[in-house]
Amino acid sequence: MSLKEQFLLRIEKLAGQVGPLLEESWRDARQRIDDLNQALASQAVPGERRARVSELALRSKGQQAGQGSAKIHAFPGQEKASQDSDFEQ
Image (cartoon, rainbow, N blue to C red):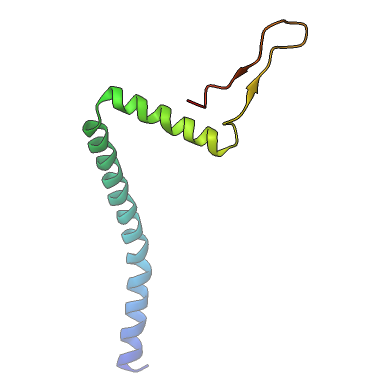
């Protein structure tokens, strides 16, 4: 076996051992960065605005799902008038 072949085998063996460690370290670092990003975003937005943004996001998702023009009707036997859904404002 030539010196070049021995060198390539050692490199491949080393890459097989180091690769999983690097992947795990990268996942840990990425998770820490994501956590930090969420914490900073949470501190940057005041609580009352955060609640309003959540409400608007849910309303938007409801409209995208086709719930924007829904009518709410009473159960049969009840005499309550129908009303528009809360999604439209």
